[in-house]
Length: 579
Image 1: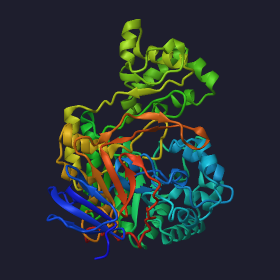
Image 2 (image 1 turned 180 degrees about the horizontal axis):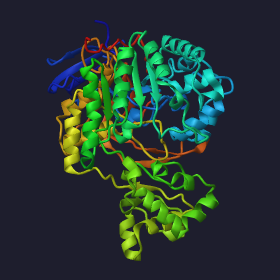
Image 3 (image 1 turned 135 degrees about the vertical axis):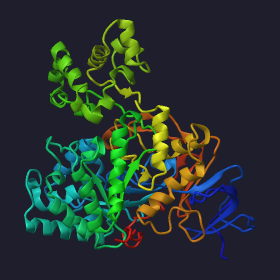
Image 4 (image 1 turned 135 degrees about the horizontal axis):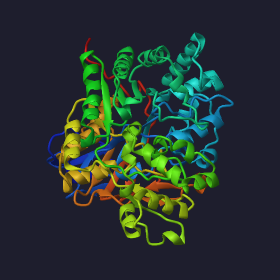
């Protein structure tokens, strides 16, 4: 054997199979794992890491990100890289920035700014928007990323490229559907991982109109699924109203038909679990069970951690979806503030938030349990870190009135952190049951999106820390399998997800005593000086991609060993149950 590039000595190897840890040496050569030897090896290597007391596991695969734009200006895909993620899947929810027509850049930028919370200034200044085809855009990442990156093809981009302004508000003609199919074939031939689409009521464009894919007929959608199924190693991703509210029978039927038409797995995002909503929990699992009975595969993505999310009266956030709120919060700032000062407007807003029509968004209307984050005015000095209910008690006022008084004093810029309503023991037991279901996959971070109000990237290290030192609901071996091998298998990633001879040397080395996530904080490092929420990791000693360190002792390196994950070449078809 020629000289190893890397030798990791004496590690507790958790290989991603779900089996127990084994103390072993791990050798790496030419970007692949050369051996995993419990007996140890006296091999010479260019780099040797003493891993006594440390764990070595497969690099994590994040199945639901929106790094499509950020990866252009941030080759590291931060902060996911710091949390052990070595492969990302982007192009989700029907939203990609390719293909694109000559006059569509402004529309796509404004749509992405609204639906995925990417600062418009960052999109304008961080990208040159000179590509047109999916192939041209995807080719920009070859040799230029720290992590491995694969991308689905977004239905909205296909529709806009073919139909222009008619993509919003119009049905596609048979000729236009054929043009979309041709575009999709070309995108997948270039390496696209399949099709993503949305029919969700929450997805509106920069003009406040439903995004293009929401106007597609079922026939159009199924024709595109059929194209995805023509190619090796593809998948489907889908968002619909029922992902939030619980599925109607027609939605369950459509998801099964999409999977069957493509002969590919379909995943949806995101399965939130709350003991107060047992009927929705059962309903959403039922969609997968019904699909399986028909020979289809429908997989729910669910997060194993509670991801904090900021609320804002200044920029778009989930409170905009509360009944009667959107029209008020869409007003220009002076008019918006004037409305929020009126008692009758406050009363109507509160009634809307408490109405049955609020549905799942009632989760974000527990105003008493909003924690006040960053403030900006002298009037709010000393309120950071306090709950609205405690300030209201001191002032002898109603919780909602105090909340609005606080944000008005800051000209609506106050950062608000709702206390998660679903952190009770029963909800966690329901989550554990879902993790063990063959119809669920851990993931749904949305990393790269909603940058000013959430940071989902730390879910990997947070979950492992919880399994080791927190609630300990799951063995760490099963947690690691769920974060690495399980998503790799769903997307048919060749040679990834395990620590075994011949596999790609995508590895995480961590200290089980300290692995976790640091506090989430704001960081102004996006193009144009715009800001995002960010969190470093703790206890992550190394992250390797193809045997090269992309993270050393919690800090990113300059190495760019990542590979563009292309369908067929780097993925294999995941077969459905025989029909």
